Length: 499
Image (cartoon, rainbow, N blue to C red; front, side):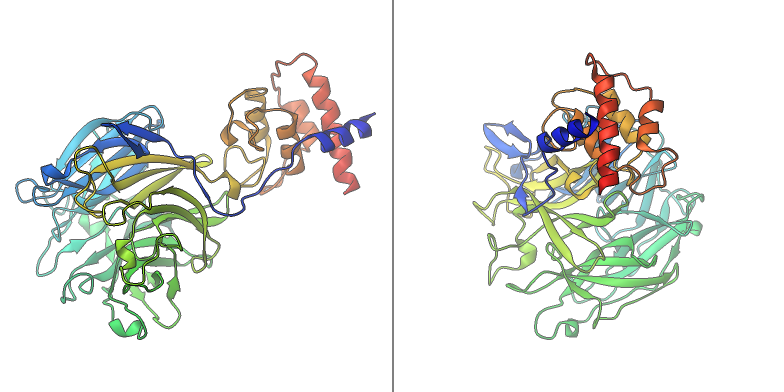
């Protein structure tokens, strides 16, 4: 009877469909002033204000709240000759947002959480001082970077500092981040010199003496003799597959050329080097700012960027000026990138529409994104694709890159995932994080089978699957479900043995 039940279950339950060709995400939209805007609108600034929205950043606080920020640029973008950044909070998973604070003296800045405190790291103004500020109340109030002991990490002298909302990463007991200055001369983007900064993870991050800086690396147009290597900027601190720190930078190339990125080797906190023969790579979205993070659960590097593909390619327009397709990409090794999903696209007007400078974070099996968005608003729209009028929030699943059965996206299939399934047994409208692995909208025997098939992935389980079922103490509301589950478990065990 058990073997028969197993065969019936195997025949009746739908197969898990793995990720195939890139597809357009079913993104949430906001009706704004009669216009359907992609994503949740966090804030809006009409072009008539002369204040354009830049530098989107997003972080997740220890209590699960989201914090997002942006700066202003344009003719009225600053305040008192300094940068101006606004910080917003959401306590309902990004559905609604409220203004928490405005920071004068911060631009091109990125948020991050470290030791449960919120930080923002950027420049005091365009090519100004390198400054960091700290908030212990989730973004409502901030420290003042008045000197080298309180967040003024480096003063702008002959050269000023530049960055974007790029990631921080922990490696070898230090916290790392990429930066640039404008010390090469020659104008944008040739003037950027790339470097990486780091500090011990338990040090006072507001104290300039705790931060080490590598040497500054200029670029050369000769690095791509048949194309254009016009400069690099907005680097990402990333740990590569060999456990080495690298800085992956955006590369500005000529019109019609394939998008590129550059990978700088960071040997230690004080020294970096670059080999243009081996370390310039093809990368969709590489001509615009991107953010790379590694997912242990997927065992892949992910990024979200504005890509050029066959739908929006131009032989004459600079790839850096094509920003109307937002996509998620993955890589096994930081050098070969695959477009996994088109998140948002609008091909109607490449000159006025842009989804750009996305910052994002992992949130279970989802990634949550803040985008600098140029889009129609019923008020004349954005000034152009670059001069954004919206800050928008987006959520997209990356569960197709995860192992089926890994509900909590920790890279393992174990008792924690089984408990999640039990807690949500027969729940309708469920998603991956609630243990609906096959996407049929309900947590049931099909999902239990998937956990059983992958039991022990990524770990050495303390108990077998049938022992875990007996020890889990799951509460299953369906009458007779427990006996059915026991039979199903036995069937799964027998089926695995036959394989």
